[in-house]
Image 1 (tube, rainbow, N blue to C red):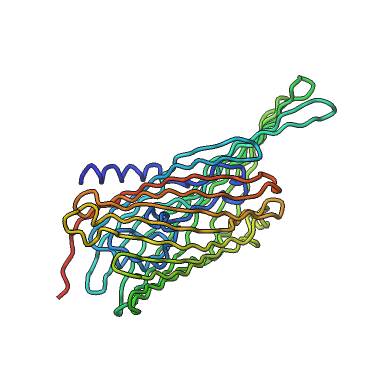
Image 2: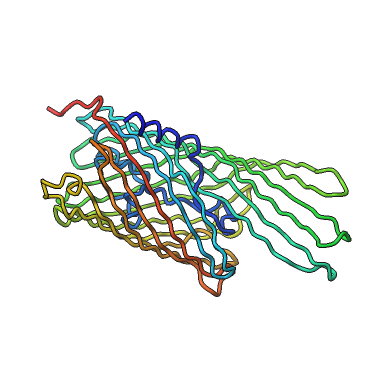
Length: 400
């Protein structure tokens, strides 16, 4: 138990924005994280309508009231992206966040949750070639960083079958970007520009979940629009003169995000779920200007969770092992050259007991996005995610 807790606590030291790896993440605040756990990713990233006794839901704070006991949860992922246009591939490892749930009271299922979670990641490295007065040059674009959030929230069940939740989000993170121009001869001097943008600000997340209809759970969550503070420094480096540094400050818009979902316990062994979410970035401003390359984002997903050996009393481990399958399609908020590329993912996963009330979840996702007619061509994506949740029945008082 102590080793697992120590292992999860290590996640907090590197729990930053972790999703991306292509030049598309140069736009806006980078590629957005789905904010789903390994259990939910195995089910097509359907989350907002799900209840669980062990899994801490990152999208719907109302679902926290379904969790039993003290819980500590963290995860990591590995992503591999193959790009058809350039015949290249990139890969990256990522920490998917850390969450802690503390049960405050049982009559109203009052729960306190704190988390450090990734919001976006901007990570890319690409080169291009050109000619200036018959002199060849190479231009390089490079970036890294992203946004993360610290969350603190509560959930409760004030009346039977209605669960509510609210959370405070504090956003923070840096995005560093660099452009470098180099010529193959000495007739032209090289030049380099570096831009560092720091973000910090706060917002909220609200959730609702209803389980009064037999075998059905209906959930919804909303993250109201907010603006975070942003400050930027520009560094210009030339061979013939000293670097010049200039600064600017303003705000960054994070638009309203809405999600709605349903889960159906079709049988004792089978759970089915579906979700729809939307966020419109079209008019989002940064430094009082509309950001380039942004549009409307939405996602629709379906998933299933199956316990085939649940009634097998002789197979202890298998009786608590879940198999998952799902699918989702989404349109990212990035619109490069006024074109948006749909993403399609097939997902699968497994959930298994470790010991006692502790569990592990593994998800595997395969997807593709873009088309041959677009600037970057099509991309094939393989993503593996692993999470561990540990728990104890401390501070729990049984209901009368």
